[in-house]
Length: 441
Image (tube, rainbow, N blue to C red; front, side):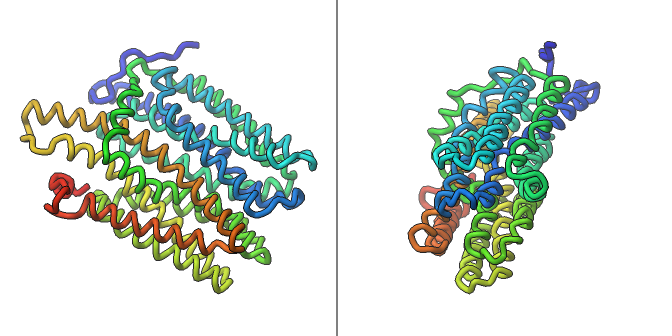
C-alpha cells in the first residue's frame, strides 16, 4: 500500500486546518510509539547486566556490556538522520522498528545458555544500539510534518516520549524478569515491536518534500559552533543517557547490601525525561546560555555529592544526589537544545538589517544550518553515554571505586562551564560575537 504525500504545505494555515494537523498528529503518535521502543531496547542491558551474576563477569566487564549500546547507537544516529528523506518516513519507521527484533531475540538466546561466552554478550549488546539510532530518524521525520511555529512542541513531545523509554525499561524489566526469567527481558518487547511496525505501516506517511543532504551536515560539521555545542551536548544529553544506564549497575556494585533499590533506578531516567521541558522553558525566559552555564555548575555540585555519598557509604545521600545529577542533566538537555537554533540564527543575520532580502535569505540559511547541525550534535552528544559507563567501569577496575571517574566528570563540567561563558556570555570581549549575546542564546 503506497502512502506517499506529494502535496504537503504545513506552513499554509488553510492547508494545516483542512487536514494537515490531523495527518501530522497521527504520524507523531506512531513515531513516539516506535521511538519509545527504540529507547527501551537501547537501554535494556542496564537492567539485564545487573542480573548476570551466574556468569561471574567482573564489574568492569558488565559496564562494557552496558556501554556498547551507547557507542553503537550514537554512531548510527548520523546515517539514521537521512533515512526518512531517502526512503520515506513511514517506510523507514517500519524497518527501524522491525530491526529491534534483532537485539530482543538475541538477548533471549544469550541468557538462555549458561555457556554463552563473554564476547557473544558484547556482540549482542552492541546490536541494542539499533534502538539508539531511532531517535535521529524519528526527529528528522517529524520535523517535516509540522509548521515552523509548532515544531518546538512537536519535537519536544517526540523527544520526551523516547527518553521516557529509559525509565520504562528500568521500571518494567525487574518485574518481568522476576516473574518469567531473564530471557523475558528480550521476548517481552517482541509483540510491542510488531505492533509499532504494523501501526507505522498502516497509519504513517511518506513525504516527497522531505529532503536531507549529507553535504548540509558536512557543511555544519565544519562550523566551530557545531563542535562547541557538541561538547556541551555530551555534558547534558550524554550525561542523561550515561548516568541513567549506569545507575542500576553502579548502585548494585557499590551498595551490594542494598540491591533491592535497583527497582527504583527508573526514577532517575523518569525525572531527567520529565524535567527536560523545564530547561527549554527557563531558556526562553533567561537565555539558553545562562541556564546552561549555571546548570553545569549545578551538575558539578551534584556529582560531588554523589562522590560524598559513595565515600561515606551512605546510600541515602548517594541515591538522592544521583537523582539530582540526572535531573540537572535533564534541564541541561532542554537548555542546550534551545541554544542550537538561536546560535545559528544569530550568526547568520549578524550585521544585516531586518526587513531586507539579504536578512531574510540569511535567516533561511541559518535555519537550514541549524537543522543540519542538530543531527550532528545529537549524534556526537550521545557518545557521552559510552564515556560515562566506561569511566565508571575503568575507575572501579583500577581503584576499586568510582571516585576517579566522578572526579573526571566534575572537571569536565567545569570545562563546559568555562566554555559556555567564554563562547556565549562574554560581552564585547575579543573574539566573541556581540550578536550571540544580544540574541540571548
